[in-house]
Image (cartoon, rainbow, N blue to C red):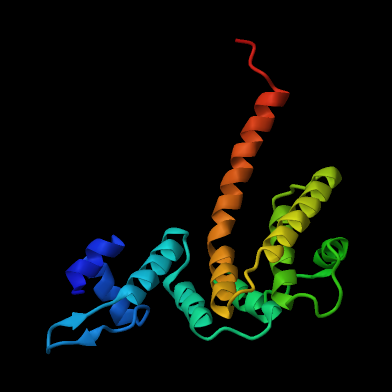
Length: 203
């Protein structure tokens, strides 16, 4: 198919497709002339992945990392998770103490080598933001957080497809990148339901 057809099929404007081609996010088509190229189903699939990531708020640099992981996945599932997280989560060595983050990790079942140091740093940064704002998560709420994320994580990992490595990669990488906005949206919706239950309207 030509680029106009690719645009119509994938629902992505031609200028955006050209941008993705320039950035190397989308493979070049097969040249049919100096100014024309043909594209296939693989381009449609790749465009849909790119758009889903961009719409979820992943940066172009993050999209590039996700695509690289999809194209050349690590062999171990733990390494695959690490690569997926690295693609969508910021990294930084900001010197924040990790002691409180380690305590939470231990409550989740942490043991040495079970997760990347960056994930501990993520938790430490989040805790530091709360501390600087003078906000403390009540102990019972923190327990609910830990129980909830443990349940979610186990269900997600249990759902990793085992038929083909490609399907496993797609599930882990795209699930990591795209499920977090859904989780946040569901949390906000559930909070509103809980608020109505606890504080019913008098009208």
